[in-house]
Image (cartoon, rainbow, N blue to C red; front, side):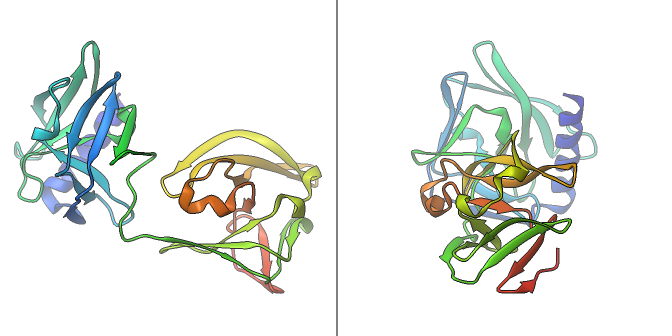
Amino acid sequence: MADTSDNLAKLAQKLASEGPHKIEPTPRRVRALFGGKYVLDTTKAYHVWEHPYYPQFYVPVSAITNDANLTKNSSVPSTSDKVHFGTVSVGSKKTERVLVFNTKDLKDLVKIDFAALDQWFEEDVPIYQHPKDPYKRIDILTSTRPVKVELDGVTLAESSNPLFLLETSLRTRYYLPPTSVNWELLSKSDSETYCPYKGRANYYNVTVNGKEYKDFVWYYQYPTAESAQVVGHLCFYNEKVDIWVDGVKEER
């Protein structure tokens, strides 16, 4: 809890002194479940970019439902009473990962840490990890440019029909059919991550020349509808392996 409080305090201090990187209202209906109840429900949420990379949802105080209680607690140090810690509770369940703002840009808005609640929704669609950036898109393109993947001189995969996944502001990722991979070198990992654009990712470790490399490969068994093409395909970290595209080696 101390680490979380420290992080929230630092965020509050930054926003109180500098303001957000960007803020925009969103017409989406935003709801969130906590303890089996909807604790917030609003069509007046904001996308708030705390940093340049992706937004979070901030909601007006009025978004807190009658099933929940919002308590404004002590002022965050070094914010001149512009930001307070808060508590959201439903019955005996509560979270203190809450900030209540009274700054120029964020007046009467509440941030509840995304991971603190059980499930968020945009309209009726569950969202994971963080809200989608409305200015980001994903294109998944079929290609006949061959892709070869190596590590420490050993070929991990080679395909003449890869999928190129292009995501705004990120490097191209290459998703290869499972039949193009050298499975003798892969072992399942227990790791999981979530992407709001692609869904839940599972991982494989790679063992080459007697050395194991953790989580060098990921795949989506049940991707989101917008990324359905990559289902079952494997993607190797460009930054950690050697990749040739149409015979040209990429820089890591």
